Image (tube, rainbow, N blue to C red):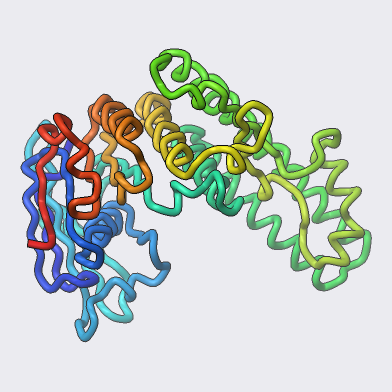
Length: 357
């Protein structure tokens, strides 16, 4: 399964844009402001129904327009599948498959792995970036995880409301019990995924790649579960009840999970350059591909924004080699003239389109 053609109408800066990928990997270039990222955003909106830039899809409508339209043509083993997304002002987005059917079957769509600029800052950035990466990856392969997380967040919200209302100790114990019950289930799922992917898969793949830069061999990723390691979740909630009363919210739990990156016992963000951090994060996404493919039936398509920035020649070659080895369609962007010459022989694996021309 691969994307063959895309058509955008009144989406972000584009009044009318038609691109032919010819079922190939795509290198989309252009100067800043030409809409490279907007093309990736449009594909993501059509496949997932969501934007990575905004919660309100009205923001994607070109100025002074009444709505946007995105068409994709996807080539599958059994033929060509067409899908359209339309969004009008003050109306929900609609997605239709070939023939105008109101719904699109999940099996007809690829799984999108969107690697954007903020993801590549997760080591030095805020906790939410690392937690978001962990959760999205976990939801793909731990089939009950999403429902568990939604129930946990709902129960967490209810406990927080109880704390703000300054309920009695008796009522708070009821919410404590409910949160502890679902929290323990979610904790087990989080630990299982961490061991299976971050410990086993990442470390095994690293052993296979002895030719990679030496710093990659020193990386350790630790799971910070969101409360003191010497306490069970239940004990931690009971101990924090008075503190939480004063704060008006739940200060610890699985929703506070974090990933800590270390190199030779030092925090990676204080040691690694931005280029080294970016290389590590890209490889982490690529290594997750093995786990993902074992759990899903759909094909995976990678959208990678601004792939060349902050990567030296050696790192860029490693990234491109690993990306091409995924045997998935790659749709990537790069600033015109910025390191694209460094693609060297890898350029033959991409259809090149320049939005500046």
